[in-house]
Image (cartoon, rainbow, N blue to C red; front, side, top):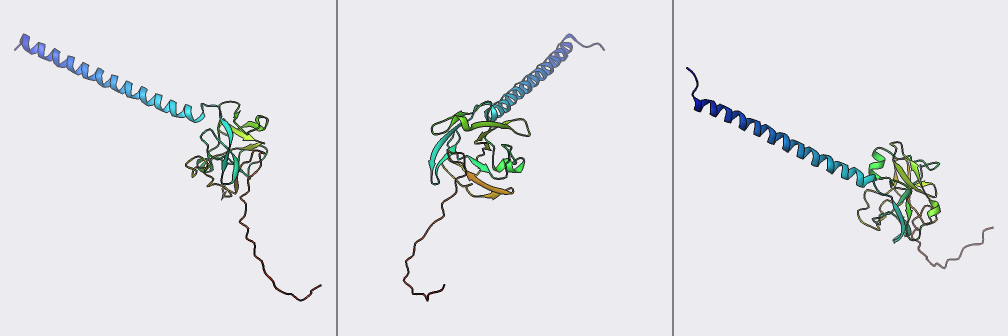
Length: 186
């Protein structure tokens, strides 16, 4: 028995719908893939695609170096010869200040003391007075200095002054007066 004209048209229509569905799915997958690619590219670009600016900001420690968001910048005592000793897990807690090119000096910062050093992954980390600079993951807002004096990953961390040296937290001093008599010891 030979198919009727109507049955042949139904088969062709079914194949046409399947083709349209396939094209729709492929088009949707391509659009989602492109959107995902652009989003990842944007995130990566924002992390390293800018020139860093270092400024001076007043905190409870006094005036310290900060990044463009006002977050305190720290030095790591384990770093030597302008090279970072902080990578892997350390760099997750103490993110390095990265720059695409030569960093710029904001108010209160000496441009001649700014520089960069190449990290093991090839990125450029900003230095000040030859100290690689880092932020601290637990400093959530501008002006916080939660990392000051921390001893993590084998050495101490300190906020950086405009002179490019460690800002040491001033110890609390108390003065007491006493009037005691003591025998005269030589």
